[in-house]
Length: 361
Ligand code: PMP
Image (cartoon, rainbow, N blue to C red; front, side):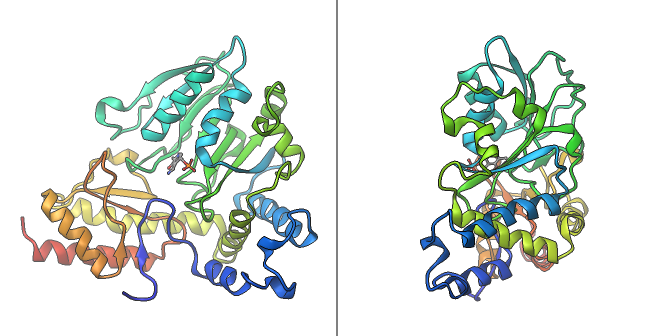
């Protein structure tokens, strides 16, 4: 097995090599302090520089305006499924959810335990292979919840829905920092870190100030977004390692063309694979509606399940891992996050052609 392979996992996933190497070089003795950063108090100036630096760098790289606060919170995206309704779905209020897959379903179910969360559209009839767009948002709703990229199904929202005056709350876990966002349309965005930001262990939450003001104050402290924001995500001991790694990943994004380059790379990477799928449609097929295809997670099928198994196994032998699709979709899935080099997609594309020639149906 070569030193480093192309890892197409859906998250946790491939991270930029320079970020991993810098962490390794500094892990035991952080910049000559005589101890690891992770043996240092989270209140130390050494850590504070990293913590505040990460918040500022995310703001700069992702062009997040001062109208929105950035919070880094242990607990992942799933905790937000609960915190969102706790904060924004008080007595007499209701929220609307567009259900576009496994994660949208989970967000909806959790919200329904807390308050009046209504599913206004679902892609269930097509096994979530397309994204419903034909719905109207009730202007009295407290928020509209959407999932911008459906990691498991391989679909993605290419345009923000028109929610009128209703704030949009977007789970952006799997397309975070991969394309420009019109922040004026976003009341809150959130995502687990373990795709485009770093290792697992936290979520990043971005909340517009007017939403923050409306948030429920009658909650236990950890559940309150406004407390985390006012303490710069230091109300309690923050997830120091994911934050440290996120800072390194953000530096890598900044030094490699920023968000705009990440956006271009995403098009190029997925284009390589979708072009092959479209050209050789009688061998490779994409189960997802064409207009809803994800740039981050490319789902595809081969003529038989046996061939799919062989494909995944042979790809691994050639240094391309984690190409098995999620069990709810089957087939194969190539996740192509920011840190996946273009060469990784090119290598996979070449392998797809060779495999097809060597294994006619
Ligand atoms: N939403 C989406 C779109 C996801 O892909 C995931 C995890 N893969 C989650 C939510 C849940 O994230 P976490 O595991 O960080 O709770």
